[in-house]
Image (cartoon, rainbow, N blue to C red; front, side):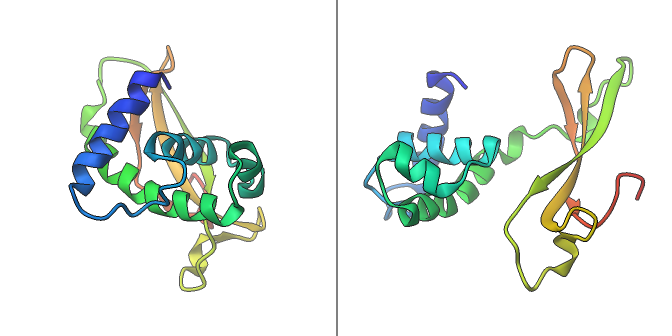
Length: 147
Protein backbone atom coordinates (compact mmCIF):
# COMPACT_ATOMS: atom_id res chain seq x y z
CA UNK A 1 0.00 0.00 0.00
CA UNK A 2 1.12 3.53 -0.64
CA UNK A 3 1.65 6.01 2.16
CA UNK A 4 -1.34 8.01 0.86
CA UNK A 5 -3.56 4.89 1.10
CA UNK A 6 -2.47 4.30 4.70
CA UNK A 7 -3.05 7.96 5.59
CA UNK A 8 -6.51 7.86 3.97
CA UNK A 9 -7.39 4.75 5.99
CA UNK A 10 -6.16 6.46 9.15
CA UNK A 11 -8.32 9.50 8.41
CA UNK A 12 -11.36 7.27 7.83
CA UNK A 13 -10.72 5.39 11.09
CA UNK A 14 -10.31 8.66 13.01
CA UNK A 15 -13.57 9.90 11.49
CA UNK A 16 -15.34 6.68 12.47
CA UNK A 17 -14.08 6.84 16.06
CA UNK A 18 -14.80 10.57 16.32
CA UNK A 19 -13.64 12.59 19.30
CA UNK A 20 -14.22 9.72 21.70
CA UNK A 21 -11.62 7.65 23.44
CA UNK A 22 -9.17 5.87 21.16
CA UNK A 23 -9.70 2.10 21.35
CA UNK A 24 -6.07 1.37 20.41
CA UNK A 25 -2.85 1.58 22.45
CA UNK A 26 -1.44 5.11 21.94
CA UNK A 27 2.23 4.12 22.25
CA UNK A 28 2.87 3.82 18.49
CA UNK A 29 0.29 6.14 16.95
CA UNK A 30 -2.49 5.18 14.56
CA UNK A 31 -0.39 5.14 11.37
CA UNK A 32 2.11 2.65 12.81
CA UNK A 33 -0.64 0.58 14.41
CA UNK A 34 -2.44 0.39 11.08
CA UNK A 35 0.79 -0.73 9.38
CA UNK A 36 1.27 -3.37 12.10
CA UNK A 37 -2.30 -4.60 11.65
CA UNK A 38 -2.08 -4.69 7.85
CA UNK A 39 1.24 -6.54 8.07
CA UNK A 40 -0.25 -9.05 10.48
CA UNK A 41 -3.34 -9.58 8.33
CA UNK A 42 -1.42 -9.80 5.03
CA UNK A 43 1.58 -11.88 6.09
CA UNK A 44 0.28 -13.43 9.32
CA UNK A 45 3.56 -12.60 11.03
CA UNK A 46 3.94 -13.75 14.61
CA UNK A 47 3.00 -11.03 17.10
CA UNK A 48 6.27 -11.43 19.03
CA UNK A 49 8.20 -10.79 15.81
CA UNK A 50 6.15 -7.66 15.10
CA UNK A 51 6.78 -6.52 18.68
CA UNK A 52 10.54 -6.83 18.16
CA UNK A 53 10.34 -4.96 14.85
CA UNK A 54 8.41 -2.05 16.37
CA UNK A 55 10.15 -2.15 19.77
CA UNK A 56 7.04 -2.73 21.89
CA UNK A 57 5.64 -5.67 23.85
CA UNK A 58 3.73 -8.54 22.27
CA UNK A 59 0.68 -7.63 24.33
CA UNK A 60 0.70 -4.12 22.84
CA UNK A 61 0.75 -5.63 19.35
CA UNK A 62 -2.11 -7.96 20.29
CA UNK A 63 -4.22 -5.10 21.68
CA UNK A 64 -3.48 -2.98 18.61
CA UNK A 65 -4.52 -5.71 16.17
CA UNK A 66 -7.66 -6.47 18.19
CA UNK A 67 -8.63 -2.79 18.26
CA UNK A 68 -7.76 -1.77 14.70
CA UNK A 69 -9.04 -4.84 12.78
CA UNK A 70 -12.78 -4.26 13.38
CA UNK A 71 -12.38 -0.52 12.70
CA UNK A 72 -10.61 -1.33 9.44
CA UNK A 73 -13.39 -3.76 8.52
CA UNK A 74 -16.05 -1.12 9.17
CA UNK A 75 -14.22 1.49 7.09
CA UNK A 76 -13.66 -0.86 4.13
CA UNK A 77 -17.03 -2.64 4.21
CA UNK A 78 -18.56 -0.48 1.48
CA UNK A 79 -15.54 -1.06 -0.80
CA UNK A 80 -15.73 -4.87 -0.93
CA UNK A 81 -16.93 -5.97 -4.38
CA UNK A 82 -20.14 -7.98 -4.42
CA UNK A 83 -21.38 -10.52 -6.97
CA UNK A 84 -23.56 -7.78 -8.50
CA UNK A 85 -20.36 -5.84 -9.31
CA UNK A 86 -19.00 -8.63 -11.54
CA UNK A 87 -18.96 -7.70 -15.23
CA UNK A 88 -20.61 -10.63 -17.01
CA UNK A 89 -18.90 -9.64 -20.29
CA UNK A 90 -15.39 -10.26 -18.91
CA UNK A 91 -13.60 -13.49 -18.14
CA UNK A 92 -12.79 -14.20 -14.53
CA UNK A 93 -10.66 -16.55 -12.51
CA UNK A 94 -12.48 -17.96 -9.50
CA UNK A 95 -10.69 -19.68 -6.65
CA UNK A 96 -11.03 -20.30 -2.96
CA UNK A 97 -8.59 -19.55 -0.21
CA UNK A 98 -8.36 -20.45 3.44
CA UNK A 99 -7.70 -17.54 5.78
CA UNK A 100 -6.33 -18.26 9.25
CA UNK A 101 -8.36 -16.84 12.12
CA UNK A 102 -8.55 -16.97 15.87
CA UNK A 103 -9.85 -20.09 17.51
CA UNK A 104 -13.22 -19.58 19.18
CA UNK A 105 -14.52 -22.44 21.29
CA UNK A 106 -18.08 -21.36 20.51
CA UNK A 107 -17.44 -21.75 16.74
CA UNK A 108 -16.30 -25.37 16.17
CA UNK A 109 -17.11 -25.10 12.46
CA UNK A 110 -14.05 -22.92 11.92
CA UNK A 111 -11.72 -25.81 12.72
CA UNK A 112 -10.60 -27.73 9.63
CA UNK A 113 -9.71 -31.30 10.49
CA UNK A 114 -7.94 -31.65 7.14
CA UNK A 115 -5.61 -28.69 7.78
CA UNK A 116 -5.63 -29.00 11.59
CA UNK A 117 -6.13 -25.30 12.20
CA UNK A 118 -8.85 -22.68 12.56
CA UNK A 119 -9.70 -20.80 9.37
CA UNK A 120 -12.42 -19.40 7.15
CA UNK A 121 -12.97 -20.25 3.49
CA UNK A 122 -13.42 -17.33 1.09
CA UNK A 123 -14.17 -17.54 -2.63
CA UNK A 124 -12.59 -14.86 -4.81
CA UNK A 125 -13.09 -13.83 -8.44
CA UNK A 126 -10.58 -11.66 -10.28
CA UNK A 127 -10.13 -10.50 -13.85
CA UNK A 128 -7.40 -11.98 -16.04
CA UNK A 129 -5.18 -8.98 -15.22
CA UNK A 130 -5.52 -9.73 -11.49
CA UNK A 131 -7.98 -7.01 -10.48
CA UNK A 132 -10.32 -8.09 -7.70
CA UNK A 133 -13.88 -8.50 -8.96
CA UNK A 134 -15.71 -10.25 -6.11
CA UNK A 135 -15.21 -11.70 -2.64
CA UNK A 136 -17.69 -14.12 -1.09
CA UNK A 137 -18.85 -13.98 2.47
CA UNK A 138 -16.64 -16.17 4.69
CA UNK A 139 -17.63 -19.81 5.03
CA UNK A 140 -16.67 -22.06 7.91
CA UNK A 141 -13.16 -23.46 7.48
CA UNK A 142 -14.37 -27.02 7.57
CA UNK A 143 -16.31 -26.49 4.30
CA UNK A 144 -14.54 -27.18 1.01
CA UNK A 145 -14.73 -25.14 -2.21
CA UNK A 146 -17.28 -27.45 -3.84
CA UNK A 147 -19.68 -26.95 -0.91
